[in-house]
Length: 185
Image (cartoon, rainbow, N blue to C red; front, side):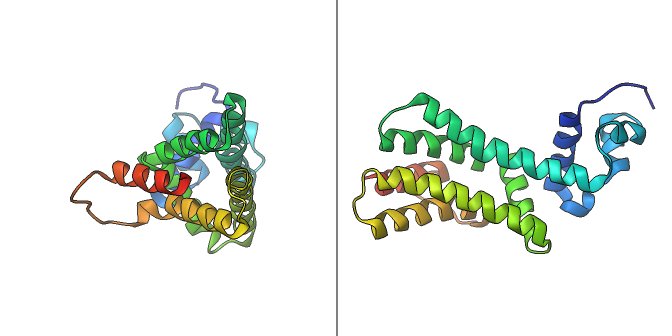
């Protein structure tokens, strides 16, 4: 095996590939090293054990899909509906890509069997919903209406890849865009 250095981020990205294709049990040090073309000794340069890698993966996922997304939307500014459109554009671009949603789905499945992952997922879901509540609440004076819109948007984000149905009049992407415009009205 060639002697080369890999960053911790490279290990995490390769681990996401394995998680997406085979779940958390597929995230093992030797297959990761093989995928990266390095020895497994390189793993221990960055991580003390597999659990540390798994924790880093969850942290990276949360930072990328909550912190970075919210920071991006907030940095662009605009009124609440414009921010929601930006947020939803980012979120649904993610949903419509295979790798992104495969990781999200794998983490949700993993959380069903691991209470630590379930707690992390709960935190991510709560943070995402809090941001949606904030934005919808700025233009909907009816708290129940805002909460319903938040839940519908979030359910659409999470469940879209699980729904295998054809749309005869338009593409899935067009249906999603139309649904979101209705919710933003």
